[in-house]
Image (cartoon, rainbow over all chains, first blue to last red):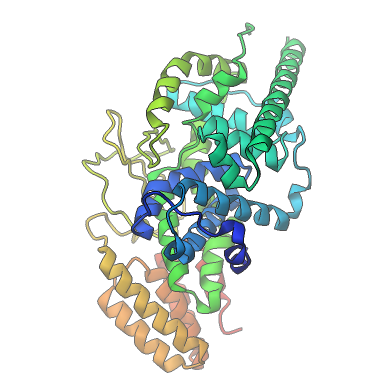
Length: 199
Length: 261
């Protein structure tokens, strides 16, 4: 789907907040931050089938707006601001994703039987489990948690990237952790039951 | 099956922090697509739109190459055990991951190594990350950016993998990519003015200069449109057939084969 990227372009929230060291070129931004954008898109719930589109849309906007980059904060904060807009737009157009923050992804996980033969597989599996857990959060808490816990952004950085004040960021991260703990507990509970039934 | 202790949320987060990385192929495929979209190398946006958005519908294997190469194949290989075991071993790797995450905390670029597997892996050492420009259609080459001990190039061929996949050595430089883009953009602009003849001129130059070009499939797709625009149905169909031969997995093919209708 081709998004109305111009709309995102024109949103002041996406206007580059600048960086202490402005990136010199599009190639540089792409090379240094593609991974961040990619994994963040995944963590914000972009399905595999839309991942390429979504990430490309982010960098199209980056390409258009790079010239405006002025140098007040980090490139990643700016990028995430663009990404969250792109992700939300994608989601708005994806009719099938009406059931945000529910346990569907979790229940699918329970039935999955996997083992981890090596470390990288274990990490991939952990990412999969965590992403399923993240599905139980709403967008605001999800963004705050991803930036805080997975990307280790500071609260002021998260505040800037998501356009809210720092207190709200703390509250969201706290609430996200609480909800994820509960979701994890449900996952364990379901696991225990499916194990019992398998016997 | 034994009960295994579940990891805490913190442990899961630590392990997951480095578990969602793109492959080198993901980087290159998307870069190429972004550059092409920036250049507007699309007939009225449709060729690229097709490339970028209908990939999932037209060729699921294409759109999900990334997942097949990373998560999919990985997880596919894992079938047979239990999630709980995976979680247990997640715990086991937490110490490593925590260290790794700390190292990565400030780092942004992808220096993470990860192993790809496929049904027919072809391993090839990568001394150094080349400026690979993976083909937009049917990307099949994956390179590792870091020379890790187990670093390999995993090639995950699909059943319909193109026979004429450009070799790494034959990959054009970035400047020739810029030239390709310029030629295709000229063709597209001519087409948008209904000047099929001018478009064909630009496409001829493209195929002369870049017979193995990175944007060869896009060029052929535009040629199909230009030939239709100039009423050369037969030749349009021939060009579409050629595209189908050269890039059988490309989402451009379906559209090209329907051309002139």
